[in-house]
Length: 352
Ligand SMILES: [Ca+2]
Image (cartoon, rainbow, N blue to C red; front, side, top):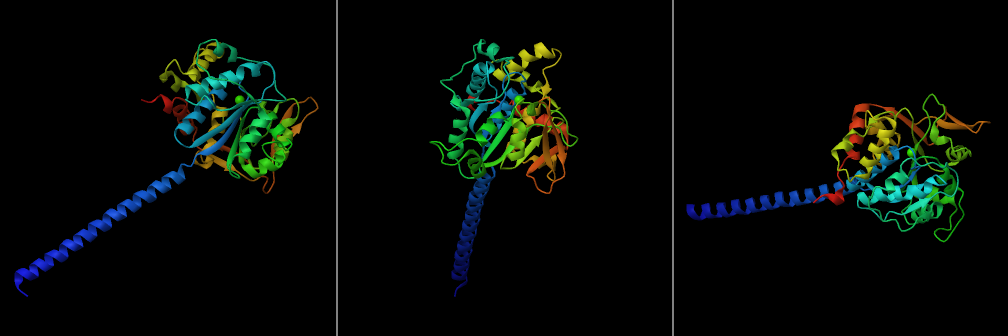
C-alpha cells in the first residue's frame, strides 16, 4: 500500500470516526434535551385546585387569589373553580369581587359557587369594588356543592387539592352531599376518591386556642376536621403573621388587588399597605412542597372543641398518624419575599 493511499484510508477512517463521534454527540444532546424537556414537564405538572374563600371582610383572601393566579401563570397550578363560604348579603358582592380579580388575570370563566349554609352577613369592600369600574364577566353562579361535585367527578383520582381560607361550611356540605347527576358517589366517597389533601387556614399550633376560621357558630369546623377522609395541612394563625403587600405599589392602578389593598389600608392602617398573610401561606403550601419553606409536624392530631358558648377551640394532641399536619417558619423573610413577589407578578395575559 502506497503511503498516499494509506494516508487517504487513514483520513477516511478519521473522517468517518469524526462523523460518528459528532453524530453520537448530537444524538446525545437531542436525547438529553428530550429527557430534560420530559423531566421539566413532569416537574411542573400543575396542581389542580378548588379555592374556597370567605371573601367579604379580610383582604388576605384577595392577596391569596393573586398568589394562586401567579402560580397558575407559572404553570404550577390549575384553578378548577372557586367557592364562597359565606351566606347572606355579602355573597351578593363576593362573586363579583372574585370575578373582577379572575378577569384581571385573564381567567374570567372560572366557575364560582355560592354557599348553601353558614356564615355571616358583612361586606367590607365588595360593593365598593363593584362601583370602581373594574371589568368583570360574571354571568351566573353555581350552588357551591353542585359545582364542587361536578369538578371533582371530572378529575383523575387523588389529584385535587382543596384550599380552605375561610369557614369550612362548604366542605362540610360537600362531605355530606348525596349522589347526583355528576357522580353516583356520596360526598365522603367522592372526596376519598378524588382529593389529594386539603390545605386549611385554621387554628393555633401547637399551643391551641381560638382562631377565627373555626368560629362558624354551627360547629361545622369540628365536623370537618374530625371526619374529613383525606389528609389536612393546617396553616396556623402564627405562621400567617407576616406582612406582605408593599410590592403591589409597583403594579398598575388597574390591578384590583392593589385597589382593594389601598382601599382597606386607608380604612384600617393608613400608615402602611402591608397586611397579614394567613391565606397566602395556605395557597403557597397547597401548590408547592411545604417542607421547602417550613418545619412540618406530622405526628399528632388537631382536636377541635365546640364549646357551650358556640366558640371553637383547637389543640394539638398526640396521635400516631391522623393525617393532620401543621408547620412553623424556617425563615420568615424568605416566605415574605416570595409571597410579595407572587402577589405583584404581572399577569401572563397582560404580557406583550
Ligand atoms: Ca379568608
